[in-house]
Structures are given as C-alpha cells and as structure tokens.
Image (cartoon, rainbow, N blue to C red; front, side, top):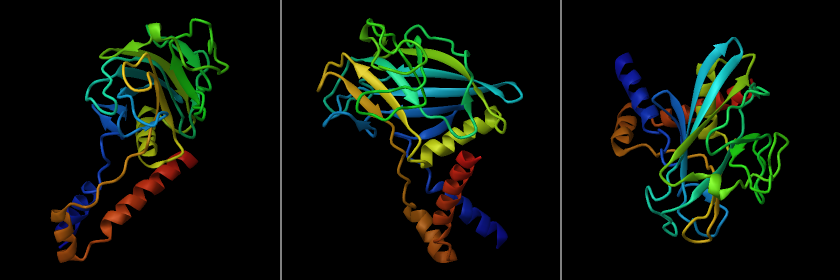
Length: 255
C-alpha cells in the first residue's frame, strides 16, 4: 500500500510540471529562460522577436559563485505574432533572488552585450536589478549607474546568433547548486521576479519589441492521473505539490 501511495504521489507531482514555453527550467545543468510568444510584449501585437538565456552557476570559493549567461536571439524559430525573421537583441536584464548580490567589478563583457547596467531600465518597464546591452552609439546607458538600456542595434545579437557574458554573485547562504535551484523555483512561481529582453531593427510589426518574462501556468492533472486520484482518494495531492513548490520559492527568497 505504501508503494502505491508513493507511486501515486510521484505521478501527481509530475502531472503539474511547468509549461516549458516560457518557463524557468533546468536543462543540462543550466537554468533556461525563454522569452517569446508566451511573454508580455510592449506592443499590441508581438513582432515575432524572441530569445533564450542559459544561466550556468559555478562555485569559485565559499560564498562566491560565477554566473555565465549565454544569450540567444531565436527570432523566427518559430514564427509567431507579426512573423519577424530578423532582429537585433540589444539588451537583457533580470532580477536577483534574495541572499544574492552582484560582485562589483566581476563583469566580463561579451562581443555584443558589452555593457553592464545595474539597474537595467527600459522606458515603460520596471527596472531589473542587473542587465547587459550593446553600447548605444551615443553612449546612453554606458557604465554601472543604470540608464538607457535600449542598446545599439548594429552591435546587438543577430537572429540565429548568440553571445555570452559572465559575472559573480556573492551569497552567505547559497552555493552554485543552491542558486541554480533557487532561481529555477523563483522564476517558475514568483510573479515579482522579472526578466526583460530588448529587440530593435525588427523586420515585422512595430519594428522593435520589449518582452517581459511571464511565469508559466501549471498543467492540470492528466486524465490518467485523475483516474488514479479517484481510485485512491488522492485528488488533493496535486494541489499540495503546488503549495509545496510555492512555499519553497518563498523560503528561498526570504532566506
């Protein structure tokens, strides 16, 4: 009987797995954030610009973690919205979870995203705690004091290409594994945690886009799982799994 209950519990938790279209999920040891059709656009209609970020965490020493952010411009894969096939990804910014702080002076620029902004601010959007842009030709946003995060289209990441930056996070409570888990849980369940992408020179729709990350919806239990719940009287397990994940997210952010 214990085995049946354990199996049913595992099935129930699996049946409420997060949607992967706009989710914070762990793939091959990296936290993957996708911003595209499921994200909130600054336009009435999405242009079709999209991107993906892979965040990898590595311990350097006690309390010091190196974060490598690989940023992909995935415009046209797939087509959606106004059907853009070309764009320049000129900026990406996001919030940090509690008990983590940016390690001052630790930023290593990429070939395209060569400018650090703390905070990262876009017109009409709330500020993110940290972000990276291609430097505006007029020098807007250059330096660590925040400012214009629009970036320079000619220096941005072209559709189908990618760029990487790295920096360090300091924490008294989390190592690399803890940060990976903490960011993943928070991005899946915390509506306050944010991430933004800026696209310019888009060849469809409004011609530019700002995409705001949206936490994923959870799947409803599948019919097979519901049948098991009915037989065993375990219909409440799925909701308990959801509450447990949300409580875990809150605990991570509260420290």
